[in-house]
Length: 481
Ligand code: NAD
View 1 (cartoon, rainbow, N blue to C red):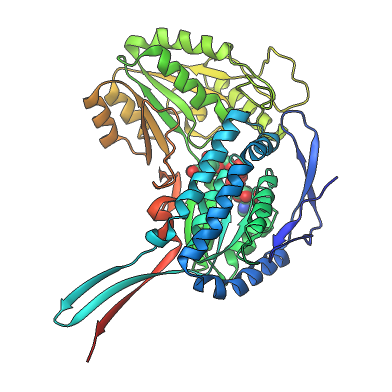
View 2 (cartoon, protein in one colour):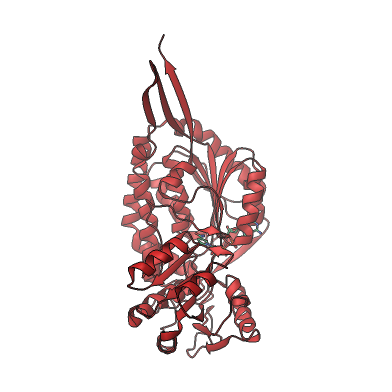
């Protein structure tokens, strides 16, 4: 059984672990490898390597740093089919979703290739007579990222390419449930000739995270994961004087108005709610549908969900893959049980699978109707293939329900009415909005991040905000005597 290695100072090295975790393929339970739960000393070694590399790397001209990323981008592109298969094997999502994930990750590398322009400063001549003022951007130093299981390839790339392009050196703590994609990224980075220590990877869980949050030589932490851990990371890292961006959990409301074309809405919603087995921070999880069309909508949605092909994501045609682990499957089943107990009407029960999939962590699509805002299944993030439906009299009522959520990652409105779309855009309290878009994921040159309990920090990931997060500024005022 292969044991994953850490990647420190340009080399794959054994972790100083006393515990290891199995890495099963979620589609069949077969063990692929083991991941070490590294210790604080492993983090210290990675940070020492990153600190030593920083001095030279920060002085490499931005154009030259970008050239490593151009090479990295080409290698990712050449290997994209194999990378997508790895994502499917370790995460369970189907191959089409995995290919989309790889594409979106590569796009951040492409964005970061523009660093010479993105990092440019500003000059004002003659702010006073004979006095000029200029702003220059600098990297921060060693920065770290802690990433979740649901996008094992893409989420590390939200931070890594921008951070190193800006002249920082980097320590990554990938999810211990999907760590293999990160090591593949390291192998490809090695092929670019990137100097040793610029990127380092330490595998593990809480002990590694805690050392990252406290380490005096780490200047900034990017976190993506669940809400309670995001809040903990934000508070702890900030208490240790670090810059933090912590992207957290979600509960995304999708509002269906009566003028929206039913067939198209169903297709968009199906892939939003059940793609990636609902394990997406942009998954639509609560539908608010106008009373006038609710019965037709519910019938069509149930029919589509009943017909959804379930199975191993490697097999073409399968749309709903497994969830990440058996304990997560049990957690989702617990939420379905709670929904029933709290009086929601169970339209389709994913606990009962009508196909035989004995060894993977599969759950069928689950639909609840007549849910209320107080129910646990509406208030909490389930992170599985469960969709809840509420019926509303109009957009105004829908907005007032959606805005009561403690989360505000994304929201979608289905309509062809311009005025309704504008009202939605102005009044919904969420950071990433879709108008007839099921998964409103911003492109790499826009910021990615939510509102309210879906985000802790000031600057979102990617886009110019990502560059701002990884740089600090000097303002120089000059007078020649
Ligand atoms: P998670 O919070 O369990 O884990 C995320 C990272 O934190 C992992 O690297 C993990 O090792 C570490 N971690 C877990 N528990 C910890 C603890 N107690 N102390 C310190 N570190 C800890 O999240 P997950 O289950 O891997 O990912 C799913 C979650 O991520 C969902 O809530 C999803 O909404 C969220 N997510 C959010 C976004 C976004 O953009 N807002 C994007 C992707 C995923």
